[in-house]
Structure formats: structure tokens, C-alpha cells
Image (tube, rainbow, N blue to C red; front, side, top):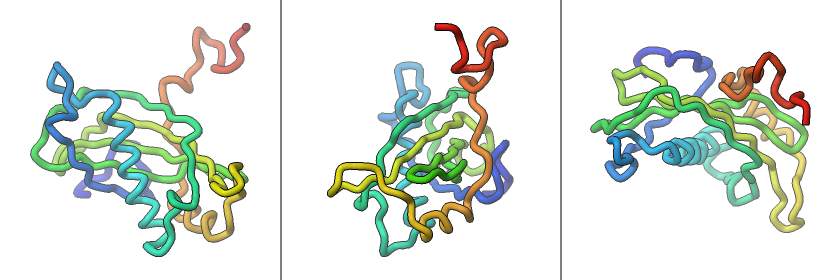
Amino acid sequence: MSTPLVDVPGCADVFPITVRWSDLDAYGHVNNVQYLRFFEEARVYAFKAWFGQGRDLIDEGMLVASQAIDHLLPMGFGYGPARVAVWCGGVGGASFELGYAVAGVEGDDAVYARGRVHLVAYDLGEQRPRRLGAPEREALARVTAPSPVLRGDRPVGGVPRGSEPR
């Protein structure tokens, strides 16, 4: 990465993700659902980088519990890959959160989208969440920084989200 991406922590790993012509919508911009696919692809690369080549957390069991994304700018087609930054935003007993930022091709340091994905470690055999082990926690600690603040985190009408009257 030639220059730091806006609001991306220094511990984040950045992965090149190909933007295909078919990722564009009728307006010539990357379709909104494609950003979640960019997150997913970068997450696969991040897991290999963080947890090692001999261990595949995806095969062991890792479920997406929630996703949130802010689309900041429309991204068009580029002849080089987009860059997706990934880092850990925090770790719980059986879960962790990843932060993401999607930037343009090398030389285009605009951040087009930011997001968070909450993942749960899952025991596929037992069909239930499992606790994260010490090696997983240690690997995640090396890439931990605050999660991105998204539009949905802001108060609605001056009332913090989640505390609105029902």
C-alpha cells in the first residue's frame, strides 16, 4: 500500500480483490451486494495470513452472525484490483468482530465502503458455538484495533440506537 488508507488502523492487512465487470450495476458502479462479497474474500485471505496455512477456521466452523456496511462513494470499474483492509475490532468468548475498508486500485486511496462483520466460532459436529482458543486469541490480538464507526451507530433523533421507545 503506497499511502495509508483513511481511518484504517496500521495493524490492518490489505488484500487485492478483483472487481469484475459483472460486479457493476446498471449505473456503472459496483453493486452494493458485491461489497459483502469483497469482505468475504478478504476474510478468507486474512484467516490464512493470521491463523496459518495449516489451519482453516472456515472448515472448523465460523459463522457470520451480523454484517453492517456504509457505502461511502460509488466505485466504478478499474483495471486493477480494489484493496480491502481487514482487522479485528474486538474479541468475545466465542466471537469476534472484523472491521473492513474498501479502497480503489493502487493510487486511488479513496475509501468507497466501510463495514463490520461479527463472526461466531462454531463446532460443526456439536452444532453450537465454541469458545475461541488461546492461539486464535493471540492471532487476533496482533491485528486488533477499534472497529469502524458506521452511520447506524449514530443516534437517531438524538436518541442512542437501541434505546428508542417501542
